[in-house]
Length: 63
Image 1: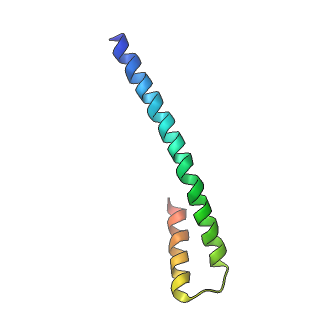
Image 2: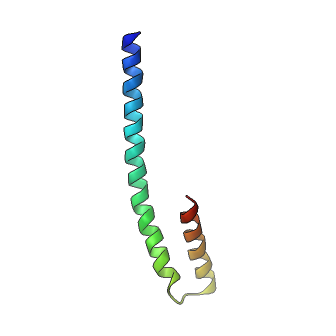
Image 3: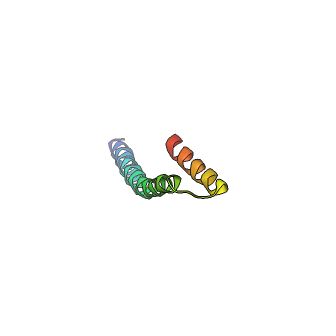
């Protein structure tokens, strides 16, 4: 029983570590994408392109 408890605790620790690392790895490129979308939003681009930028920025704010 003690051994099973240790195994569960180690599994939870590894899971938490993995999720923390993955969260960081995903946030970094997303922040770059949102930054570029912000810059694009300040440029004089076409109507369709402005809509794409708006969608990117909107999606970034809700995630």
